[in-house]
Length: 349
Image (cartoon, rainbow, N blue to C red; front, side, top):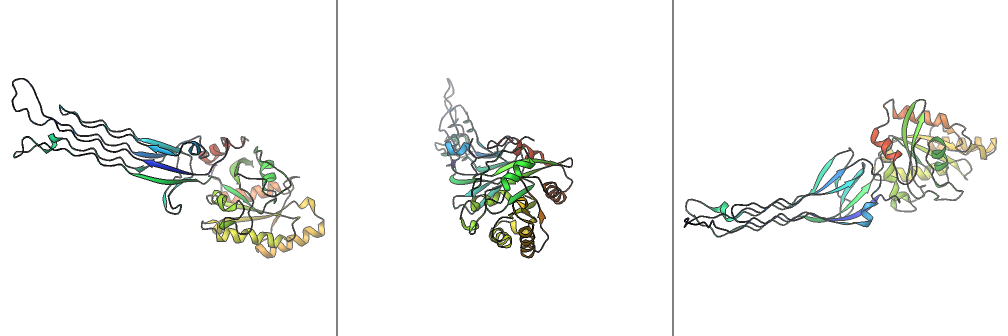
């Protein structure tokens, strides 16, 4: 199943049923009076967070959701039935935006949370409702109210404790595959990772969820490369692990490129706790390693961790640094469930 984190959907709540004009007609009852029932209320459109979903792929194949109309009122004071609500099921971390893609309507962060996106129209009153001491035989009834309709955007932001960021080919997917049971695609060319990946990491009897997103390039926050679309997936993380390739031309410049994109992103990424690590140290000479370490230290203003995802050097230290920031609280069930059941990779550890 393909990972889909954004979908455009049309929703329409049901119209209210019309009120009825009717009069009681029975043998020996000459003036039975009005007996028209009220119309039923139209169905609502509700969005609900459910367990077991980790993608919006269902909304690629169905984009239109219309709630049924309320039943019209009938004679003998019979009121119409209400229209059934239509429920759109989404995973934890889904946001609802208006058609302009900028106005946030609601942000779902809890399992089981519900939000009424469009209310059904009220049913019209039958003529029995208008009976009064001065109007004993009203011949008017109300039509039902029209339901609401609109286009919305659903956008998914993954729930994870820690996130991996870095330039393409920084070794993020290799690192994720070594520390969890995730099986991301790994190859020696940029943008091997095309979709976010989740993995459950176990270190020192502590578990947390780690997210890997496609590599960032200059201009990512404006839509360059793949970063603009996927930066939001690490927005909810408590800590970022920033990997820099030791074999790149200049580790300091590589760090600043990604840091600039994080600072320019509209979310809260600039204020996230960041752990900096120089990766692939097994692929450079001691002299190159020393030079790259100093460059990275000057650029980040902190001493970087030294590690190699391929050989495992320094990996435990990096994980322990993440756990220290995440804290002693156990991994949330919703985050672990999301990682374990993610359809784009087998991630059970």
